[in-house]
Length: 400
Ligand code: PLP
Image 1 (cartoon, helix red, strand yellow):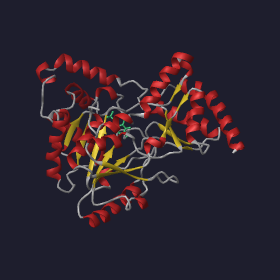
Image 2: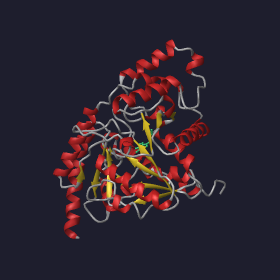
Image 3: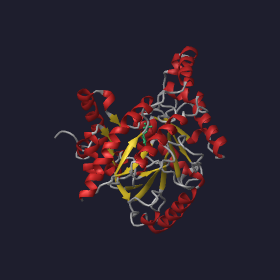
Image 4: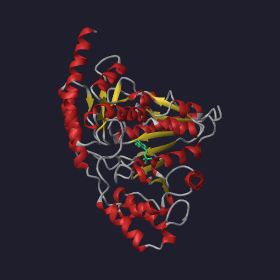
């Protein structure tokens, strides 16, 4: 083998979600695309707002191409960083300066930049199950080890009681994803205050600070009038990672940012370090997209479309007897396998052409994730298949 021992297991175990997506494509060739109910990928189903297109055109027509396509400061255009800081400060009463904002190649590179900054080999990062499966790979790429706090399957809030046992002298970072992929749960301000208190106790014990990555690509996707707590109001050493992939439906354009809280410990050291890991990792975020998001910071996602999908799928599945968490945010429905053998449940789903993601990869076996960022027609078409699946599960349950 020519590739590194560090990468080999990552290549070997490479994305179960992607594999499912490929299986879906193969199935579509046999039974027809309209007869496959693909709930696998978190790819927004709502097109980017018109304002994005208008801004792209305006920038191309009006800006000096040398400016538009050239290198800029590695952390991004100053005016873009200032606009992002102003937007956060106005909305959340925070006190970011432009220089606290580092433009990144989506959330993924923001997280990677932070991991690369903080981790020495075998240092530990803590995630709360269920969590976005890529955290495991990002951490391994940076030479660290992901330690998982088991899920609280009663509330699916952060399992703070189990946190202490997972934190060791090697813990440098904790990742919190709010609203959560895959559950759609919002962690409350009270939960986050308890988390801060638990971290402060742990820091005392291990003798160094723990930093929190607040991964927030779904910040704008919140339903039923719920309010998402602003993380730095609750967590002291907080690095916000944001992405426009979901809120502006721009996942292919790769644009996001990290906001470094001036309240954190060793703020200047962290900020200076992050500028460098970002430069080494990706040089800078895409120039045109930086200027576009500056124009579109006030744009809101078409929440009503995801909300209607959410209600439709949740209502139908619960009516069929499936145990589902009612999503408060993001665009995922988290469903408990009705039978002990959850892999058999997923396979039976496939026989009905329903593609559901096994939550084992998210650290929570026994559950599946359905991404409802799909067309409402596909959801409606999938209902007879779910009815048959529910029937089969009942028969199996009766036999057990
Ligand atoms: N974090 C979470 C929780 C996600 O769900 C995703 C993408 O699905 C990402 C990070 C990566 O987002 P980006 O496309 O901005 O890199």
